[in-house]
Image (cartoon, rainbow, N blue to C red; front, side):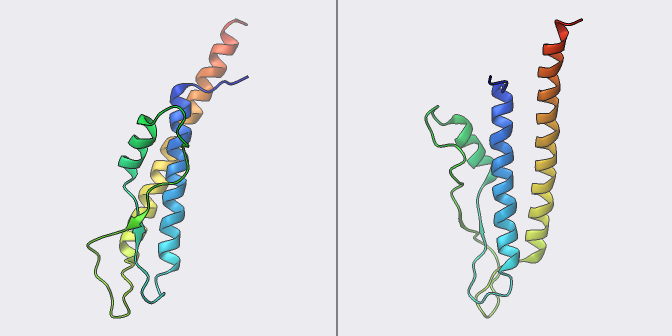
Length: 120
């Protein structure tokens, strides 16, 4: 039995994409001392909208369109990872994830309330 609502499904996609953002940010941070490494990222809002507007047969969660981040200052070794930027990105992703979890918990609470409403 499937108890997911359309909003619950959207929240699952949101959490998957947020998790992917955190992994990518962690990878950038881990490569801060790798010569020639270029910071990678994706436009979260654009990617989420693409997933939400995609067809029902689309392979959701297949991965974001990752690309190199433009406009960052490279060090002499060619690495352009900014720990300040990545720290802010991680904090933003963590807040997004927490919000998504809270909203998903509320969805499950609503489903449970509907189930128990007949028992009253």
